[in-house]
Length: 457
Image 1 (tube, rainbow, N blue to C red):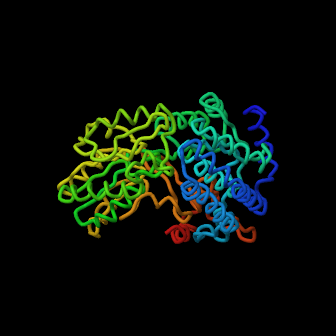
Image 2 (spheres, rainbow, N blue to C red):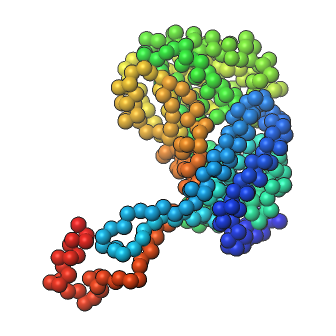
């Protein structure tokens, strides 16, 4: 079927009411969970082909998290789909007021290449739980994973319910010309702007999960060895191709030499003396991004790393010092295994520096000073983050994940994901055995004025 025919079939399917019963939603979630489990080995192979991910990292960062989200939704969808009673004001006596979640209808999910399975199937689980149909468009930059996702979804669901569209920019443009009831996009800020422009043509609501330069702050009270270990894990996971990876480090000058030394030791401990020979170390997704990252290496002095191998598209974990705020590496999201470190002398400098920059998707602060932590959380705006750790805030269905400002709009995971794919209707069920006359003309101020004021105070 063409894109237009698929969308028309999904409109008819949604209008039939087939997706609305909660038992149907639960059955579809269980069907998807079973397919993901069956395809676990194939998913691992596709992720290795596209991004050089090891089996362990593929399950740890993608397949396992998808299964966790599906299991959470299976447990909680019956509760989330129920209406919730709210207080009824005296002026509306006698009636019952409640909130009723309803699916948007026909949704479009556009996913990226860096976590192709996780960032396709996680929002799809939320869309199914909320009672929608979906057209899924994986990235052309991860062809093995995209082909596998298309195969998996075709085996699980009829196309009039869930369908995958593969291809590149031409297919993206064709999809964005259509009128959907909701669009969910994960990717770059540049493409996100185009998605939002297209959505605006049809007044379509959109959730945008974008990136940005997520800072990591290490103050003079931090536990240096622990901070180094956790920063190296989060920064170089998936070769730095993670939207919430620490993009750059702001370090108190007093401890900078010790922290840099600790980070270098951790790189050797976690990836070996020669990371390019490590079979569990991934690769850059394509030549375009590989060349872009090579161009950023000259932005500072490499205290470790800097080696590259074009035939495997690998760049060793690299730490840059002597970096200036105006350096090229500080002008764009790095999205690769390069960690610039900038010093600061006073925490107020950090807040002033970050307040003048676009709001990041994530922020990380390593500190033992609770007053400083409270100050940072109160003054700085960002999508989400961690205190004394990195990245892990997204690995739970109990909290919403999303950006703010330039890093995105809307959130998902768990209850937030169900809400993202639902419209919450406000409904008043008015009883018929009583009808107060004070709202009808002709108005009788002397007779009803006091009673009206009593009701509306």
